[in-house]
Amino acid sequence: GNALETPDDFDRLVISEPNNSSGWLQYMAYYLQTAEIDKSRDVAERALKTISFRESQHLLNIWIAMMNLENLYGTQETLTKVFERAVQRNDPKDVFFHLSRIYIRSDKHELADKLFQNMIKRFNTSKKVWIRYGQFLFEIKKFEGARKILQRSLKSLPKRKHLDTIVKFAQFEFKYGDHARGATIFESVLSNYPKRTDLWSVYIDMVIKVGDIEQVRKLFEKVVKINLSSKKIKFLFKRYMEFESKYGNEESVEHVKQLAVDYVSSQLEKTG
Image (cartoon, rainbow, N blue to C red; front, side):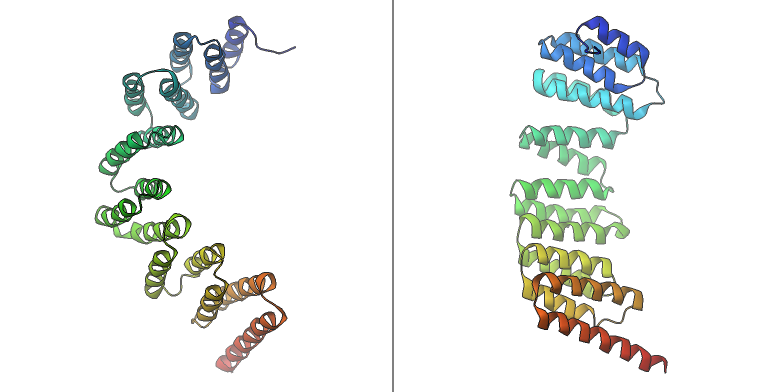
């Protein structure tokens, strides 16, 4: 069979596909199973020398595996060394994100927090970095810290990135924090951007998820009265119908149908 059982088998595999990180990763894992940590490290170094510089994703895969290896079997010092090398040789932001995931998965919250502090300094105009830090703080129930990060992010991020960031933090409030606070943020955003049906949709989804059926109805009633393009209104009526079919009764479904009919009539009167 094709079972890979000896170093020779793995050598043949990586020689036949030198640019494919998958073979190299299997080879690294083979040595880890026999607790030969240094040999696994050697395979990783060989992979870095062998894989073509054009294969940036395959190279990054090896660097991630090396960080995982050091996190599990090395020391903080060996991990930091690999991380610093990886930052030199790959997209730095990618490497920071991967290390943050490794720390979070191993419940190393203090190290993750330190790393994020470093990231918001180094990549202070990246909304993804601020959002991910905020999410991490929400996940470990550091709500006040997360809210401060939102405030700080708005001082660093360019204006065009503010809305997306605020909306993400509002979603985190619904998912991990305080529903009422999440709703307040959405209300304030939507009073400034009433025609952003995509945001109404996200808000409505959040309120559905927390099970506040009456509040969902109020939102639908409000949004279908906004002066929107007919395409957007049709989309919202369709969503309202689906919602009532699932959570309402015959009467509430009829109510939405009637609203839709009234809307169409009012459009006809306008053009007539």
